[in-house]
Length: 221
Image: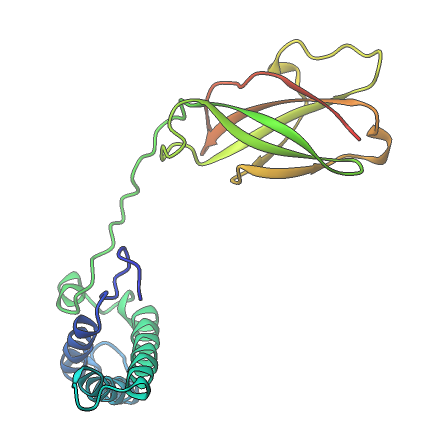
């Protein structure tokens, strides 16, 4: 069944109603909307089949496991057809906003929702993965992990050999990579084995950066 945030109705009764409405509207507007009548005919055929299958599956006398399975398959076929039509024809000219509303679809909002500057602070936990590899797991220190400003994570690090001076703060770190995952893996060079990697993480959002996380050392295997 379709997800609640999807445009496709959740119940088969509503799906059938939308399909029947599309057939009526497309028969009138297909030529103006540059939609071939073969497409409309295919939709009508699948809509009629779904109507028959749903009636059989809901009727006490004809409701059998076979009828239920046939209904499920028929509505899956109808959904595929409707999604294909929507993707190929509905969000290109010459359809207007009023046309989209008549089809039971939401008009796209061209204005992006501003997500702001990240304010949460994150750190990382490092764990062994394999030879010359360490895994990193993002951990929130402050803030809401579901904040829309948290688009991804810039993981900064430097590799320090024994006897070399360790970085005093995150600004001294020299290497970085960006990830949207809260769990990732860094593969180090063969010669880095036995050295120490120092990490710090910032949340990033389209060039806007959150506060530094603390420095975290980890031995490279």
